[in-house]
Image (cartoon, rainbow, N blue to C red; front, side, top):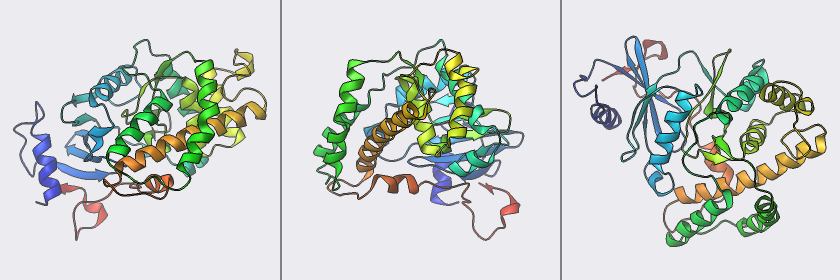
Length: 320
């Protein structure tokens, strides 16, 4: 048994109901993950997703908030059922969602109706009657991250100060015109959307909180590189009709007219870039530097990664 598989077994046996599970009685498959370790646990007819938090993530992820919000999202029917959530260790076990495609910009472009399914999933979340814990305030979070980076004596990349300065008018505008808040995902990377062809599921609630729902809509459009047609498809599904016919005005996301849509996308892209860069610096070693925020996005695992060696892909996941 490899060290990695030993860690999986150790964490799994700490979960109530799994204490007596024997090595060799279940399968393990490594799934994609950006900062955490995520595995599919195959117990015959029952399959689970086990998340082991990445080292150092406790510096910027509030696991208590994440666990609360994941439970709320599950009750809203937006994400997988939560089996076990430990805010102290960050270990999370959920039901595994079968027969889904992990989304990418390419998958959004080629899978018919996927933008609409994403819009409906976000609408379901935003309309949830239960509130999320934590208020997602982008610029306050950036200030907090920069304070941590200063403690770690991390070297900021060239141009970072300019990006923060360019975002200052956005910060002022948002402070002058606070939006009505709703339960939001706040990190709508394509890879956090799982599509079964009929319904879109959303996973990974680490950065979730009460936020302007336009963040999720605009940021997904930017992350997925949506065309004007995809934007319209998402917004029609989100609004239950044409946006201008159901009261989505000039100040709202993807309202009629390309000018307001393009402006929103540009603003959200700038905000997301600043936050992503701050997070990427936090993951850099103390006293180190990192050159580009985009590199952390590119470092994610694309698709399942087998833990075993010398066995064909069709042989199934490793048994431990």
